[in-house]
Amino acid sequence: MEQGCDALKWSPRLPKEKLRRLYLTEAKGIYDNKLIDDVGMSLYMRCRDILTVKMAREEKKVRCPVCDDAQKETLIPRSGGRREIIKCPVCGWKIVWEDYLKTVKRKQLNAGGAVKAFETFMRNYENANSPKEKMLSIDRLLHEFHYSVKEQPDQPTRPVGVNLITGNLKSVIEFLDKLTAGEFCAPELKETKDQWDKNLHGFENINWKSIVDKKRKKKDS
Image 1 (spheres, rainbow, N blue to C red):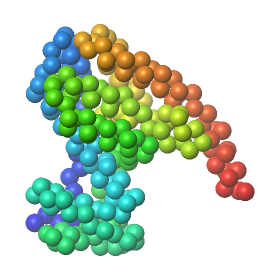
Image 2: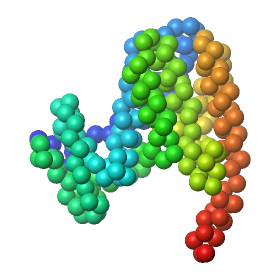
Image 3: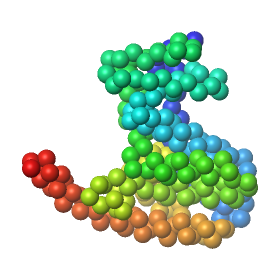
């Protein structure tokens, strides 16, 4: 049996080229079932992993990866100590909590202020009855934003795409802009692009200095 970190295999972010091919075929009015399912399930598992990490960190419930591979869900409660040993009562898998955290470091697996976006995509994708519906759910997810600034709860703080697509924040934004700059077969994709432009404008105009200053004042008071 795989133990510790070896059993934790987090879903990778999607390569830009695969997404580019998906949108090029859609623009031609073609819904490539195999490609859509490949992209859709990759995003689905990525979202699931992001929510799994959130549950482990915030709700203190660690999903056993060995049981998960066997299609059984075992949630292991933890107390919160960094050196605590997390052990599955069903299969015996175990890991030190600090080591668990190291496996997600720099992997863009933080749910941040986009939990609803990840949950909504998973639900919509599960319920999609056609390749077009799957494509629309993929497109909506890729163009979602985090909303995590308490002082400005309606202000987008960063694109969700950075959690899902390879590259840094700047390259992901540029990629999504070019990706959705052409013609679309489905008019719903144009609506998503319009909302993306609006949110991106809001993101780029955030007064970060003002937000940091407010936090400092609260801390000093």
